[in-house]
Amino acid sequence: MSQSHKFTHDAEAIAFDVKHRNTIKFNISRYDAAVSKGMARYNNVEEAKNRAASIKRGALANWDKYLLQFESNISSRGVEVLWAKDSAEATQYIEKLLVENEARLLVKSKSMTTEEIELNETAERMGCESVETDLGEFIVQVAGERPYHIVTPAMHKSKCDIAKLFNEKFNTPIDSTPEEMTEYVRQVLRKKYTMAQVGVTGANFLIADIGGISVTENEGNALMSTAFPKLHIVIAGIEKIIPELNQLGLFYPLLAAHGTGQQITAYNTIFTGPRTSTEVDGPEKMVVILLDNGRTNVYDDDEAYESLACIRCGACLNGCPVYKTVGGYTYDTTYSGPIGSVLTPFLRGFKDFSHLSFASTLCGKCVEVCPVKIPLTDILLANRRKAVEQNLRPTAEKFLMKGFKLISSKRIGFDMFPGGIKSAGTYPFNYIGWGPNRTMPKFAGKSFSQQYKNKTN
Image 1 (spheres, rainbow, N blue to C red):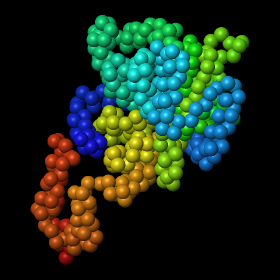
Image 2: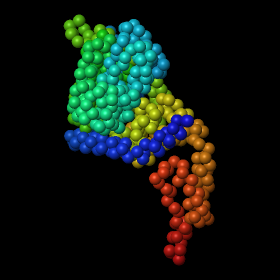
Image 3: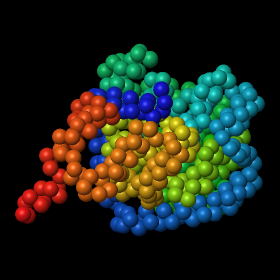
Image 4: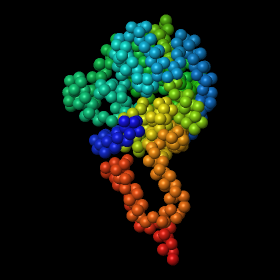
């Protein structure tokens, strides 16, 4: 089954799953309420978004300069910087590091970049246990699943779902409360932190002027993942670069307000190197892997490059009517929702993933909520055009569009066919793509122009 057909099949199944819809509706309603309060703290949120957008565009305009500045500054403190052109190269680096450090246990703080290169699978293949330490990531890992959402990985699960899962896997009480389940995970992870040889984090921001890694989180797990292991590996996409440390004062609140509704995330840490001789905690060695993996393909595209400004707040997913209907897993990609639909064709190929750019109503909600003003709907339309130009659309669609062009290019095309024939022509759509609970509306017996003439005569 092709990726496009799989998407259609999975979307049809999940769209009418009432339990799933209710869970997502409830969880996103909680998000909407929190974000509404978070935005109310701003005197002028549009000005903040304009400034953030300007900084990220400026960073992209001088991408090479700031990345090299970052490498120079962080390398001066004993950090090894490795450049990975793709997932395969990043995996080779990781395998080498795991062997060199005789790693048997790895603790990982939430990072979509590590999901992108399938770090957990690599570690398992090398005989190294990889443990997710973010609560949401821990839950989906125990369930044998991948993150559902880039900010809230277990958004698709209710507290009853999680209680049942933990009961099956850990024999905890089936009626455990969220607090009790959280405490159980906390005790499990405390032992893992102190036993691990390797700690892995992503990066919310790469800070060029100081050579720093900024990680923002709410559970303290990134701090714990880097305090005890001897090796700290950072895996970061090269688009995470920002020019200056003082710009975090703008980005931290924007990311928190759009991501969770908070004034600022609970733990905000800047890593600038391994432990020094005067420090008690921290890694003996620190390695930063800067990942391309298709990002320069996005950068080379004059229409899509602005999507690299994304700060991964997840706001576009939560606002998107398509994402809320078909769910995160239907996309079958690391990055879902509008931003994933824009990026994935470049990261994983238009041939297999151009269909994602058609998974949008173009309502503009994603553009409205984006904290760095990415023109997502414009890029989605541009991606659609590229898919047509690359001859990647179904043959039936081409004939339909040519037929529609023939009929609609002149008024006589609508006037010459009665409503019954027009309705019959759309009848197949009741079985193709619309799903079992909807039917195409019927055309009026006469066209608008015919009705207008009859009324005015």
